[in-house]
Structure formats: C-alpha cells, structure tokens
Amino acid sequence: MTPLRGRARLVGDDVNTDSIISSTRKRDSLDPAVLRQFLFEHVDPAFAASVQPGDILVAGKNFGCGSAMEVAVTTVLSAGIPAVLAKGFSRTYYRNAINNGLLPLVCDTGKICEGDILSSDGTGPIRNERSGETLSPEPLPPIMLAILRAGGLVPYMRQNGDFKL
Image 1 (cartoon, rainbow, N blue to C red):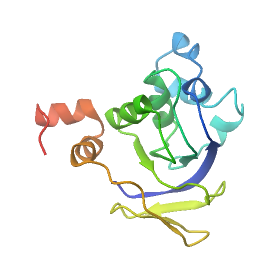
Image 2 (tube, helix red, strand yellow):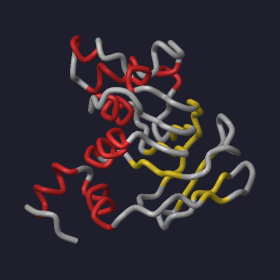
Image 3 (cartoon, rainbow, N blue to C red):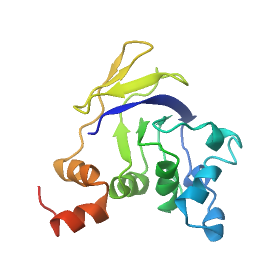
C-alpha cells in the first residue's frame, strides 16, 4: 500500500457507476481532465469543484455497482483521489480500480465523518486523525499490490511482461 493522507469525502451505500460519472459523459470526451469536472455531478453539482488532490472517497456497501465502465475509475483518479475506502465494492469496480491504479480498501467505514483526515504510512492500518481510531483494511493479495505499485495493470505488464511477484 502507498502512503496516504487525505480528507474523507463521504458518499454512502450502493454508489452506482452512473452516479460517479454519467455514462453520457463518455460520449462527450474520454479525456480524464475533462471528465473530472463531472464527478458526482448528478448527486452534488458542486462536488467535483470541492475535491482537493489527496481526498479519499469513503463509502458504505456495494461501491461502484451498476455498469462495468472503466471511466468511473479513471474519473475518480483524474480528480486526484488516490483511494476509496468502502465496506464493500462491486467486483467489477474493484478489479477496474486495481487495473487502473486506484487503491480500493475494504474496511469498516461507519465511524468516519466528512472531512476527517485519514492517514497511513503504507504498511496497512489507516488512522483517523480526528478520532484517533485505527482502521484495518482487508489485506490485498501480493499480485494486486504489485499492480498498484506499478500504477496499474498496463504499467505492470510493461515492467514485467508477465504476472511475476
């Protein structure tokens, strides 16, 4: 896991990929710099403009449900968000996150409040600086950690040419 320190941005349960970025937006542009301005536009039109680099999305259960569009991950990354903490992810969003270099961490997010500062030295536990509580995310398999360290699946394959640990 890479070191993290960012402001918690709460989004709730059952966040659909079309809520993250409307599927109609990908017809307009696939440029991440353009798409980032539409992050959660139908949920909160001011959300994208309020995001600061390093912010961390904090969700409940079933984050990224709905369609398997990869642009829902790239839009989050292009907004400067390096990680999503959730009680659970849809399988396709989770895999798309790993493949694109977005850190998906499964943990109990119930006590995190909007604006809390979350930090980790990269060894696993995440500290809530407001409450002093420590979150212990489910460990990621070594191959997923290697893919994330490389910046995603394509950079991993360029570096290794195969799935090596």
